Amino acid sequence: MTVLEVRNLSKRFGGVFAVTDVHLQVQEGELLGLFGPNGAGKTTLFNLISGTLKPDSGEIFFFGEKITHLPPHVRARKGIARTFQIVQPFGELTVLDNVLVPLAQQELTRLLPLRPYDSLARRKQAMEILELVGLAAWAHERARNLPLGLLKLLEVARSLALQPKLLLLDEPLAGLHLQESEQLLDVLLSLRGQVTMVLVEHNVRMALPVCDRAVVMDAGRVIAEGNPEQVRRDPQVIQAYLGEREDA
Ligand SMILES: Nc1ncnc2c1ncn2[C@@H]1O[C@H](COP(=O)(O)OP(=O)(O)OP(=O)(O)O)[C@@H](O)[C@H]1O
Ligand SMILES: [Mg+2]
Image (tube, rainbow, N blue to C red; front, top):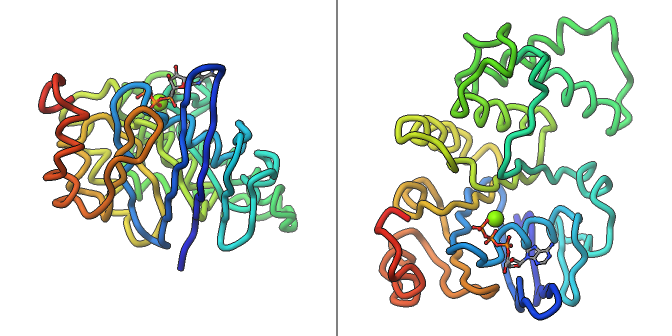
C-alpha cells in the first residue's frame, strides 16, 4: 500500500531552487530515510508534504487522494504528523500531560465522542505510548527538566499520540550525544512496521542502517534512492558528501 506519493514536486524561493522535480513514494509501515547536506531541500519537502508550503508545481497524493492544495490542518486530520528540528513540548506540563494533550486533541479533531468519564483509559493509552518510547519512568516529571535526548523521545511520543498514518521526523538526532542518538534510533526501529515514517537526518552513517529504504537529495534534487547498501555505495552520494566528515 502506497501511503505517500510525490510527483514532479518543485518549490522555489526567489532564485533558490529548494525542491526541484522530486518524485517520492512511501510504502505502508516502512521507515524511509531522507538524507542530504545542508540546504538540500529536506525541510522544504516536509513543509510541502505537511502543507505549510504550497508547491510551484507537482502533485502530492496521500493514500491515493490528491492533497496538493489542502491546508495543513486538513492534512493533519488525515493522519500526517511531523516533528520539528527544534523540540516544542509544553515545558511546564508533566511528560504524561504532554502526551495527554495531543491524545485528547486527536479525539476532538477526528470527531470521536468526547469521553471525559474515560480519562483513565486515556491515561492508560498515554502511558502505553510512553512505554513504547522508553519514557514511562519520567511520566510525572516536568518536561522542562528533561535532557534534550529525552525531549526528542517525548516529541516522538507526542506525535504518536496523534495516531499518525505518516510520521515525518525532521532531524530528531540533531544535538544528541551518541548514546541518546542510539536510544532514539532504537525506538524508531521498534516502531518500524507499525508506523510509516520518513526520517530526515544528517548523520547518514548512524541512521542509514535502521532504514528500510533511503532517498538522498542534493541542491533540491533526488540524486540517489534504494536500499541502505545501494545508497551507501552510490558514487553520487559519496560525491555530495565529499569534503564532509564521514559521520557528517
Ligand atoms: N522560507 C524560505 N525562504 C527562502 N529560502 C528558503 C526558505 N526555506 C528554505 N529556503 C532555502 O531553500 C533551500 C533548502 O532549504 P531546506 O531548509 O529545505 O534544506 P534542508 O535540506 O532542510 O537543510 P538543513 O539540513 O540545513 O536543515 C536552502 O537554500 C534554503 O536557504
Ligand atoms: Mg532542514
